[in-house]
Every structure is written in C-alpha cells, then in structure tokens.
Image (cartoon, rainbow, N blue to C red; front, side, top):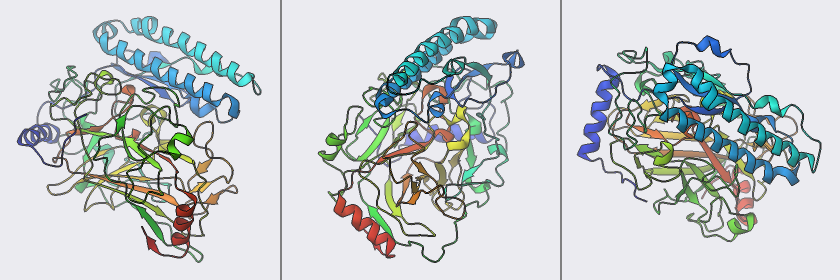
Length: 511
C-alpha cells in the first residue's frame, strides 16, 4: 500500500492552500455533510423525530450496545464481540443506503423510516437476541436489550451527542478541562454558507466522487478545524506529591515505515475481518490482525528496538486530502467506506511510559488491553473521548473536538494518554473499559485500582498547513476529530516490564 513521505508536493500545497482559502474566508465551504450517516450512539434520551422535520438528516443515532454490556461472562464474550461487530456492519450498510438514496430521502423523510430505519431495527433486534442467548447459555440472560434496537435520525450539525461545541479538551490526568477561547471552533469567515451545509459542493478532488464531503462525501466539514493560534492555553498537570513515581521509560518502535495497515481490531472484534471499518497504523508487534491470539502476539517479530517489547500499538491512519487516491481506494476499510486520500507516515512517534504523581506504579500484566478515546464519539458524546490534537510549538493548547490549523513551520500533533489505573485482576473487560480507569484530578486511583505505568503516545505529522487532512473513522462518524482513539496490548517480557517499573519508581529516565 502506498503512503506519502514527509516531502510536500507542489500539488499538495496548492490543494491545501485552496482549501484553506475557502475555509478561512472564501465563498464556498469545503467538506460539508449533506449525506445521511449512521452511528452507534450512547443510549441517551433522544428527541422525537418530528422535531427534525424539515431539516436535512445526516446521522442515524443508535443506542450504544457495547456500553450497556459491562458484565458479560467470559465464556460468551467472543460471541458477543462478533455480534457487536456485525451490528457495526449493519450500521455501515445503512449509511451506504442513505448516501445512495440521499435525494429521495430529502424529498420524502418517511422513506428513510421505511427503507432504512425499520430494516435496521429488525437486524439489530436479531443481533440483540443472539447476544442475549449467548449470555444466557453461560450466565443470567440480560433483560431489556430489545429497547436498544430502534435508531433515530439526527439533523445536520457538527456537534455530536454530548459535544457542546465549547472545544472541551482532555486534561493531562484524564480529566476534562475547558478549552478556552474556541467558540465552538469557528474562525473568521468560517460561518459563511453553513446554514444548509451545501456550500459549493467541494469534494477536494476526492476519488469518492460525492459532492460536498471532504472524504468521499462524508466529512470532515469546515467547522471541524480551528486555527491553533486562536486557542488559549488549556493544559494543566496534577501536582507532584510525596511518594510520586517521577521516572519514565521510552520505547522506540519506529513510525510504521514498513507500512503495516489493516482495518481489523483484535481487541474489539477478534476473529472479524474489517472489524474497524477504517485503517489502522501499527507499530511494535508485526502479527497483529483480527486473528492474532496471545500466543501469536508473543511469538511475533517486533519493530521495537528493544526486542523485549512485542507490544502492539495502533491508531487510525491520517490521510492527506490532496486528490490523490491511495492504494486502498477500492478496499474494505479504505475507499469503500469513505476513507480516501494518501495515508501519511508519521514524521515522529514517541511511546513513553510515565509514573503516578502520587504513588509508585505496579507492573502491567502481560496481554493487558487498553483502549483510549472513543471511535464513535461523534454520536456517543465525548464522555470517553480522550485523544487530543495540537501543533508543535503550541502543545499547551490541546483540542479534542477540532483539528488544528497549524502555522507555517509547525506540525500537526496527536496525543494519547492512556488509562493509568488497573483493577488488579483482569487483562480485559466486556466493554474493554471497566478493567482500567483514569486517575482522578489529583492523580489518585479510585475504587481499589492500582497505579500502572501510563502509556503516553505522541504522533507528529508533516502535512501542508491548512485543513486538508482527516483521520480514518467508521463511515457514520464523518471523520470527526473527536473520534480519535488509540489501542494497546502489553506484550513486554517480564524482565523488561520489571525494568520499566523500576525506572519509573526510582525517578530515572530509561530506554
């Protein structure tokens, strides 16, 4: 699969310059979302559909089944995970039908109910029934799952459920701190032409061929970008206290120079090809795909300089929207699902394990799985959104629900700070979240959880200045920056993990 180098082509610079001009003050806006989309959303109370009458619909908002299944018996998890992956595919297919039948839906909103929502509901009911049966065979049958089947339409708009447009950014301890001065991400001239989402139907020359969407017609849109120089500093750190573990361990696993990509997710959808519906970059373990068992991961080669680290680190790829098709333009996880443009190899990847501001850390168990951020945050809301965006030279200003427009000479930065508290027992959980947690605002682990080394990822990209890039996402998530996320499976050998813990607890900086 091809991927761009760090060199900026004249074509790319011209494309991004034109896009920036449109975004920051020109007439027609880029990448507007006029297509309906589907998403797996938080099970929150929704307004009746009649409230959306007369508005263009862009999103199907479905209850998030995975978030409701926090207690699945271990013997049923593989079946439940496969069924949840099937439900993601159902939503993806519904999204494609929306895009194909956009004009008819706009003329007759009832068509969407009859042709899209009701069939989707029936498929979800069948999947929910299979989930309940799988759990019933090894435990207590869950009640009320059928209430999670119906989905509703959401009108056009940039903010997902729970996103207040106020530019919330993650605090460095995992808490939320307000992003000051962001005004919902609008910069001068950026509010022109957004009333109907039509703009000039710019598609940036994308091979998706759909009008009005930066990535094959389904986003991002102009309001997803903000000039980083207009954002006020908003990063705070918990105060170091007596007993803090002040050291750090850095592992060098490269920048995915070898181009290891796939659209699987072995944590969330084990055994399911294309379980993520978007491409991931991988560094570290070289055998990570949907079918990788712990034994396969343990026996794999690694891109890490220290061969004792066979951990797998992965995240959605970033693509440049310069009108050039990537090699996966017609592939699952790529162009077939609205992920188009040239995949960018990071200019720099830093993987650091840090300590606790209040205590010593304990070793991570081997094969511990951690997901930070939420791939479905556009419809779920930002409760689990944790990745942040910034620019070199401005990293005291972090964005969660906006992409940064960096000044000339500054590079785009993605930052992931993973959960640093572990329940002391489990390497995974039914929803892949409850076995780990973030420390509180003072840096302490709660509910009997233990402090573990905190993985901190910093990924830098040398892309042309302007809004001409986007991360891969589930099709229905519209490439929103708030959906950024990172995945990690610990495959350190015992000796190296003990060294990591010792370095951190004794205040040393090790590699």
